[in-house]
Length: 498
Image (cartoon, rainbow, N blue to C red; front, top):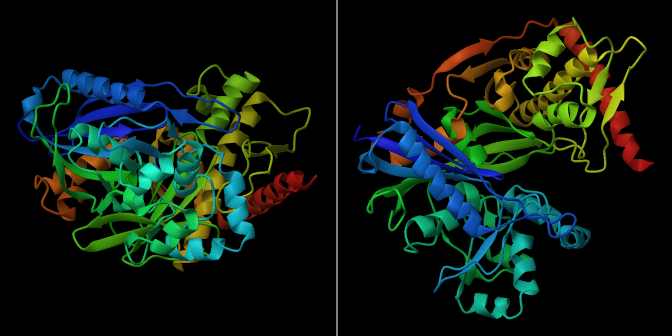
């Protein structure tokens, strides 16, 4: 086993390492959680030492589970929580503060001010993104202003900025390189999608010194070699990187325009490949880099719903009507329908395509005959309906229907939800043999970058479908459901104006 690929999937609540053979078999996996820090309401931070410790432990456990010698690892790939912002000292490698996580809202006022000043159309045109604290640029500026003397040190080149991919390459290589990849760069609000470079205009607008920034590289190439990492031999190439959602799109082998994937986690993330040109959304979606291989850039449209698996957690933890998330499917199957109950799971507002942070969760149609089984079924229908909203927006922007959705993430194991998704989206839903597609995408990119996989055709041959769910709902029934759902969403949004 001398051609093993290792991928690090550094997520928001934990770090996962997987060991993959060059024929696509996952032979080892380990996940290590780390603490979340909430110093003030709306603030979310990560300690970089705690993240690094979780990565090292996950690597060690995954290799031991696989029963392989570290010397058999041929390349390392990285995928990561996106937008989370890190600043560190170039000389010592020490972070200047905890990382500001993508969920953090402390720069909301700054974003509102930029929007009020009329800058959002330009930001959207250049970056494909909306003005929101979600992205990295205002986080960087906040840190530079909050820490005395830091802005001047940054201008002198003493400080480095990175998203988590940059930080991990720095750590894995012993500080040898300061790089990011095109997919992560496109999530900072500082990167021009069409020119594929850092934008002087955006750096000026957000007040971020150029000296902070990493070099932007492709998604499958040799960035550096491992040095001084416990459990891995020196010299192993670090050869693939991508943000988590782009890595999942790659791991699902969505290589042709129109091919799309859905990742079900706390929320649901949808990406569709739009080919070699960025598509400007007219329906509330984001435009982003999917990946850059050699001199060719592939773009994607992205839509996120805030609540997916979290709605099932709410049934368990908030209402107590199930004892485990896995129970929701059997409970929902115990009734033939939701009996007129509609649940809009806007528990933290509505994401794409509505972008209404003030919307509130809404349950309609409850009668004395409503049972916990009806609520469970309505919850799954609500998750699938939110995703259907995004696929409809994607189809409108693309000018053609989304006929197939490849799915991954924890809720993809729920057969009933997957059939609902096929019915309400009018698309075939394909579930792969392994739902660890984010990590597999990073591993495949590393295989390309290190030369173990020759081309995209070889990567596509590794993708295997476990089951396909085909639409079975009659079009009049689908149209009637969509009308009821749209009315429920309208009422959920009207709650924000009261």
